[in-house]
Length: 480
Image (tube, rainbow, N blue to C red; front, side, top):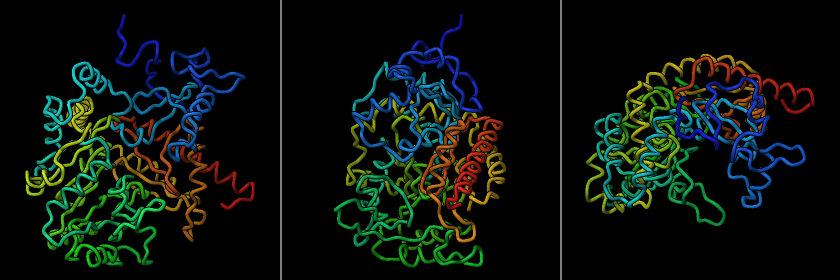
């Protein structure tokens, strides 16, 4: 008799190993399933998922995100690169949760670490714990050597706000402004939104100072790389970085929420050098990319950047709330920390999240997963290359295991087609593939442990979803 893995048992079906290729209903689902997965009854012959959504609507009248309102799926459990909904349908998760499940869903080592820690100690504010030391040591083995000072937080927005506090505290008198890049995303709290002038309702306009990202496909100057001489970078320096009142530049080395904007060679070399020359702190927002998503532990490493501060979150804790501010000791010294509110955070010292981080990062390093990301990135690039020729696709771009497929109504005019992206997202779910929608771009960020054949098959099904939507619109005389 074999014992069940952590998380198995009567309330959760055991892992099946691989995802179904057609989103079919499993035998367990047909016979009623187990425990909570079957709790909302499907009276009248409807699905369990629809019954659940109807019950939840009494408490959550508005869908939490775009993907939940579009997809209308209720997920019961996951293992590896596979998700299973309450009706037993399986999906290859090319979004890795919310780009958080680098090791896949319910990695057994992380489950064991979290379970053991929860049984010992959960939270004593920011007091030292063995879990925090273990997480710090695991991080130090992967971070560039100059980023030796660490602070632990819980979410991307919280750690970005901590970075901004630290940058202001470390800046000399007169340097009061934070520069950022157009199309950037740094979180939803007021402080994280302010640098990119994302104002809500009656909020007063934020004093933003914006440079230009290297979005070559939609260059605002109608230029072409490399003959453009990287005008976007040079204007960013002239209009933002070179100003005498700027304390820091807050930017994603690869913009994620904007649609996976990967700068060409030379862009960050110009901007990074200018930050150093003008005494402007470079704050690299790697909440999405940090942790190996692009094939290096930090995306900044692809460009030879040496940021003064780095924020990380999604790739650290296998879905558990943990975030890190890493910086040089020159910036994050005792004086700066105290002025910036220090490391204080109600849940920043949460030992369970820190245990998840220590376990996740240990597996990442021990199993050479950064090498695997680069290898799988080449597989993904080849598979997506075929999609790039589809008339509904404007551009395919990415780095490592972070890619974007931008959909357009017309390749010649590059007219964005977010409606098509929404439809493709839903159709891909019907075909057993989950991606991440965002405007006209579908973002792909699979777990690092996905199998090559599983990855290529999922991209084949995504291509079928694009083709189905394109053909259906053409048949019905819609914009195509």
